[in-house]
Length: 172
Image (tube, rainbow, N blue to C red; front, side, top):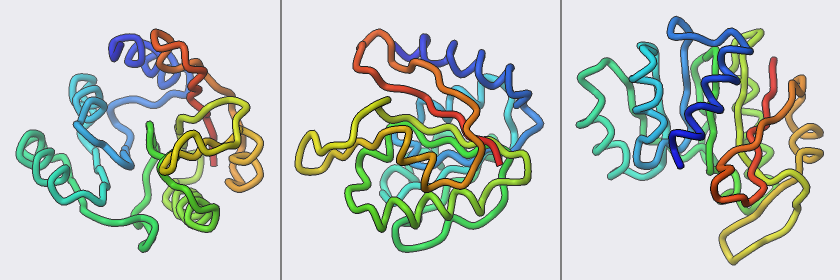
């Protein structure tokens, strides 16, 4: 499954001109599957933010020796900070239930991008509902209205699951 996502990312990043010399912010790195992706592709300027202390500790232990930075922060409460060429947010937004929190985070993402920077985020294509108590999907139209970034397109993501997940691509 992950290899297909990696191939999609390879195509998208190549098309956008994002390479190992660019700075990356990974919001919600979880188990570090995409941390591993960026490491294998030679990215050296990588930062990840997560609110779970154990996630940050584990990723720091595993990847910190490569110069990767891991910051514990609840981005619903605090602005992200810093400037990046690529902000990467995979399988995170569905856990942001409240619209005011979502909008705060999206403004923070926008402010964290360098001019010409890219924001990659996953969600469902045409969905605006709660699937479960702690899951909320938002359609592309919602992102476009809130973000204030240029929409560059989308790519199918997690195609082996066939759940309609999309990788939305925005540029500052």
